[in-house]
Image (cartoon, rainbow, N blue to C red; front, top):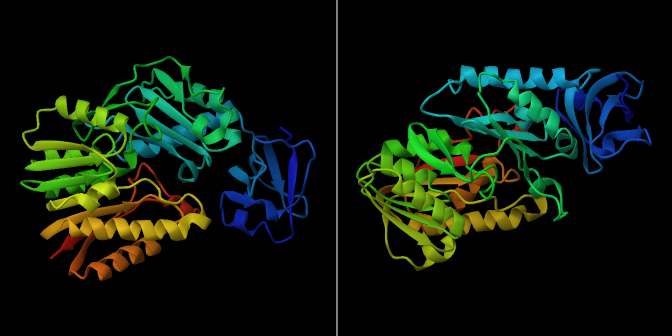
Length: 392
């Protein structure tokens, strides 16, 4: 198949030869005038040799590479990519898994499909496009998902509009089938309900699954504070780990509603307190202390020009959280801001510790789960940073 062509400046093909999947606008020397947002195009070097095939978008990040070399993006392409992603999750022990039936199936560049996220919630797949090209091909993607017999999917929901369109007339919608607004799932044997329609992101933060397990191992007999609790991921694991008490804080009414539903549907023996409040305000007002504190805030910065303010916010938050940790207690602290890299996050926590002036040990570092893989050629895919700290 012949696709429109974009020609790179001499020497700008080096990133492709290193198998990086992004091409920025300044690397493009010229392109066919017929190219429109979301088109599949061929990318050539200055000599006209086709190096890759990808989606075009009129932005600073102009091309996301789908395949290196001259390729055809058809039903067979989608089937191969999704089958490869399934095979990887099978190696991880996620397919099949009666204790954990929710996981990420496609993680953008980590699964060689930049601009695409697919999360699985039992028999429901949630598709989220982060590029116009992926959004235009959402129906082909949904059809390919149903061919994955090992998943047993019944429904596919497209949740791309918040990422792709400012047109309020467009809506997220079911592409195949439909489901209730409370999808029951199991994660490591713990039951949750997920709202894929109104919930944040695709409905649940699947990237923290292993970190929640880490926390569960330390929760027995502890008083726990979960800041930015959302629908209670860390809270539920703490209670499952026999925590004495858990205090969950979030400002979202929907998150609190679903958290309480999740707690009530379980038979935990520990005490649970819900606080509907801004976390920073809560930490500034409370005088309570805890054995274990979790800080998993939303991304404080989504662009480089907001990074400085985000770092200052992370520092303030962590100083306040550290003050609430009892001697001999722990702080689990995270950042999901992609523009705040691992070293900058670490340095920010160090700055908070210096201001606090308490002896603090790093117990271990945390990251996203392996179902959110990072391509070795695309280190930008590593976004979740976490530290487990022990405070004297």
